[in-house]
Image (cartoon, rainbow, N blue to C red; front, side, top):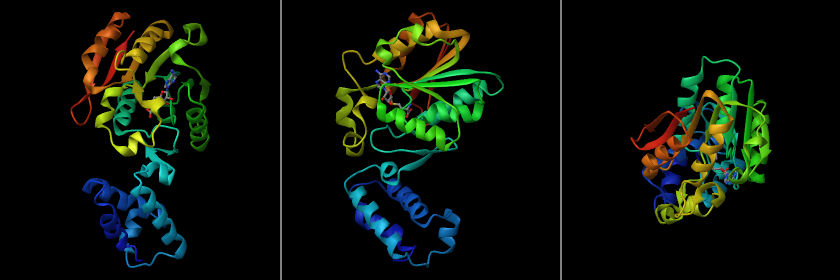
Length: 283
Ligand SMILES: C[S@@+](CC[C@H](N)C(=O)[O-])C[C@H]1O[C@@H](n2cnc3c(N)ncnc32)[C@H](O)[C@@H]1O
């Protein structure tokens, strides 16, 4: 098979399962992954023929995509806000909205020195790693209840040569005294999808991504925001900031809940698709 046939092969075999945009993006990511060259090289050498190893790798990737396995798990790597991340089943695949949250935090804090940052529910480590790289903080701490997540986040910290203190913590029953620091920034993208919203979700999420990272009980969908805002009210420095990614359907309720814990300046922000997806609150 020639390089230039990759795209059509992807479209022919997967068009019943994926959208046009998804197929387009697969063609690029898969070509770069298999040929291990930048896309400009791939376009300029599209008549080249794949060797046996590359051909076999391509066939394996297509088979897994047919089973709706997420492309990021199949390839085991992805980019997030200028850092390379290793991802595998057992950890949430970082989303574009989360990059927007990270961008907000960096723009707010880029001129500050000696920051102490805490990331709650770190998953792959995407938030704390990208913040650490951009803000060069005095200390960076990240917690998660999942062993898988902590293992992968540590691996990603090593890959990116960033010094993060990881710790296994169930944030729903952690006392403020567990944290010996006063933080300048606390950030969290906690589980926020209601069980009832499962119906709207695609198989590639439901069959492969960790439930623990996604879902909350319909009867108490803001449980993580409640616990984390309460905790943050005690362990943030005066004028420190709490940042959240949120469920777009629960913006107003989440703002009200945060205000209950004495945060004065609470800002709800829309993402690039004009959906309310993030909050900043000042202590
Ligand atoms: C929505 S994911 C976010 C992962 C990552 N921060 C990101 O933005 O891609 C939520 C994370 O919270 C973790 N988590 C779930 N329950 C938790 C708990 N009780 N205490 C601490 N972390 C928890 C999950 O393991 C998961 O990694």
